[in-house]
Length: 207
Image (tube, rainbow, N blue to C red; front, side):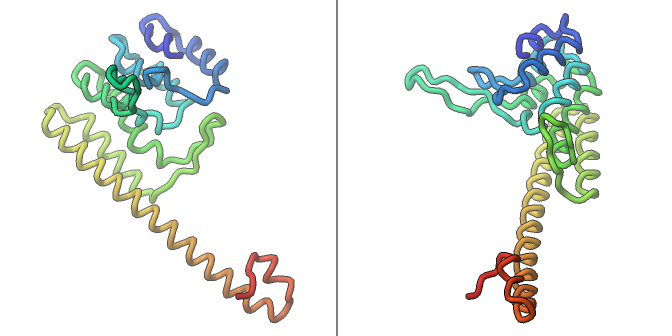
């Protein structure tokens, strides 16, 4: 898969799909340097949007956040402190077509929030519809911004907003879990007076 992405100028969509199908049972998408197929494709002189779409069909958006590994010659060890695939994208901003930029940014910023039943990488999705709309609008604004300084600023603000949404979602889930536990406990206490078997069925034990 990595090799096909490296030779993107001659690779066909069908070849890439077949390679992914053959190796879909492999748990790792990173090579010995921590490079994912996205790293390879986005750093290729011939970065093609059709091949990128194939990768996005088969790998979760979280792969775009995986970092390459830096090898420390003195300590003879590897550390995951390199670059994300999207960093390659940002460093070559002016060399890539706007459509490809928009595709990657939407996948990176909005993709994790969307429900996806892909058999290879299913995800339930999260967040309010308004959050998804906001992040998509921000991704499109970043892709359309020609000025590097303003673009970097937009990206910084967008990532901060995404982190806020993640914290809000986590807090909401926690509050729902606590509320559900309390409702079940109260319901079990009431129903136990009617049937002593109901409490244990609900997983509620006497204090």
